[in-house]
Image (cartoon, rainbow, N blue to C red):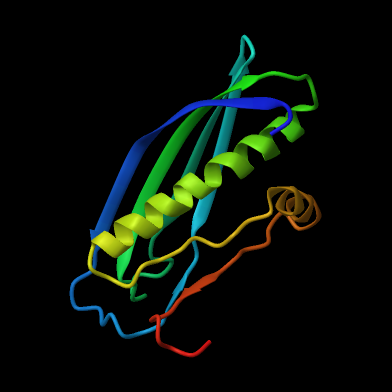
Length: 146
């Protein structure tokens, strides 16, 4: 990171609800919903990063539903455009969120789920070009062919 110094983070929320009766040997289409909120004051940038995985339709089968939120703090050490700070903070804290989700799903005795890798700079450009674009992630059993 060029413009920020990482200070700390805290897992503010981590909720998981396992669905009974869902076969663990089945493939599932998951669409994680991400939310990023930023605030800054006195050379401190605060980043709240949330992910929610839930049913998009009442009859949809998922092995779990979850919501997690990580809040992190960074010291601004060099001036730049706020978008650059947001990209740096997001890129830095996202692996912590990915690890949290994969750890909690694997410790829940279900097929571990790994959030997709995200290029935040590219994602920001795509969001500008296609503001209504939805993404989908597929969770598969480890021995299933892709």
